[in-house]
Amino acid sequence: MNHPTNFQTMNESELRAYILAHRDNTKAFYALADCLKSKPGRNLSEGDLDRLPEILAEIKQENQYLSQLDINLENIKNKYQILILPSKINNSQEDLELIDTDDAIYLTKLLKLEQLSCANSYDLGLEAKVSNLRSVEIKLGLIWILDKACIPILIVVIVRLIGDKISQSNKNNQNSPQIQAELKIFDNKIESGSVNYHGDVDGFLKVLEGFKNDKKEQK
Image 1 (tube, rainbow, N blue to C red):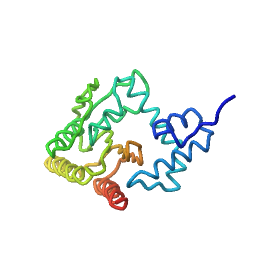
Image 2: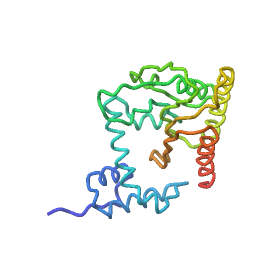
Image 3: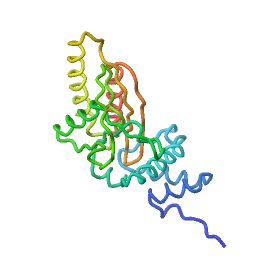
Image 4: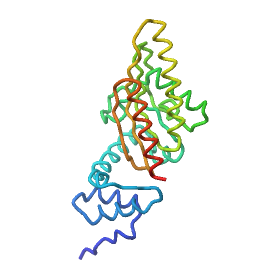
């Protein structure tokens, strides 16, 4: 005889693992929602609740792929505030070549100069090639924001990077640069938002400002 599972005694990690294995169990789903709601500064909307199974599936896929690269995701989230990763790292193809752009490497350098705890593929021991293709377009790869408190500094640093790029492009009589980047925002180690951006400078800065304003509203 199977005894009913007591979800009230399970912690967040246990609930997440249980839901991934039992997607049709609504009681476990709402127990996890209650667990997340009870955390300080955590505001879950109806949209968050609707996306929770999808978010959990994404987390599982990322964990599986990063584990193939010998990366402990939980340790990374405890150690760093921001990760600057190759854009294709979410793809689980084993033979996929990882490439860091010179813009992403420069962004990592600027963030470290601001005393942020930041890492890129080199710091994590990933085998990634460096692309030195010179282009007016700014390619920042995949940016994981693990600590929302660092968003204002991230904005300042990116503005500086954009300014350097614009100065360079003006010398070459080129147009203002386009930006290509994928942002992932984490709240209490759980992905709370993501944006795949490819557009002009002003639009990208507005996206970052939006994330910063969301942080203020949660206080």
